[in-house]
Image (cartoon, rainbow, N blue to C red):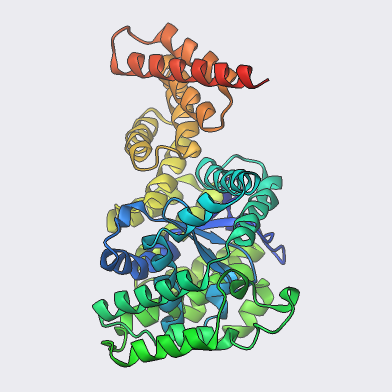
Length: 446
């Protein structure tokens, strides 16, 4: 399992050891938690007649209880929201409500109605988040910049009461179609009711963008009475608790995690292993992970975490071994494949570089805007003396970063080395046309 933080960077949570805490506003990715959240969201998307492949899920380190549907089928969730919920019902209820905003195109209409300056600001913030999540530049100081962009989007969101009512009705409709409990929407909102009279600075941030009234609550309660509500399957509830425990294990001070999760229960031992890992007690962490692996619901995530630990500590053969086990069990997970490719590049033999190339070529199609894939591809091609392919990968990377002059130079270099008429040669020509067009636009604005 790899817990990765993106703040215009690719960070590995394990590098944040001891009592060092991730900064508020850091955007994080974790294969296991993303899979759990998508298992909740995807069925709701299907009820809303939305394409599950269009979902952009952004998880932000922030202690405030907030969540939002934004542009481009994007849902932003604060870690504080997930940790402050009391049940899976509340998580699913709020997710369904946010999907209601997406289906109703409320954000699109809100942005369209803004003053031009506001519109430019929020679109810029959204672009900043997209760049941060997808490009992963290796500079830690930009974590707060991404957090600031997300705060800007939260700040600009202010749904009307009509839009809130429509999203409520849509949420109950989705959950009714799935026969999932909708009472979590009521229990979450009940926590917020009563804050309407507080000053803005004292209100929960969710209520500032999602105005709540007693009339809304009554309407939801009436709707729920006639809806199909069956208990969630045990597996879904177990995943909810797993997600919370894992978030705490990575976000709370390690000493407090070790103290809190002090029983022999599998998930408690998992939390302790993560805490030991963060403290740098790697042997303790590995020993615990090996002990719980057979009892763990999805052992592939244990394989991945051990692969990451071994990679970070220079034990590349063991890292590759564990990543391969993880990939064999769950070959569809991008982060598993990427971790394996990273370790194969570190091994740096003719065979492992070729294997890494095959993986990365596949991953670039899955996440074409992921700069780390292009960066590692350039390294792989460079080490194999394929200078044209290396330059082309660097050109792709620089275009993502909007470094147009550097991208143009790399595209020219690619054209010099590549065979005229080949697929890569034609792609280099396309990139050069794009860089010249963008350079011309920027020159005209000056």
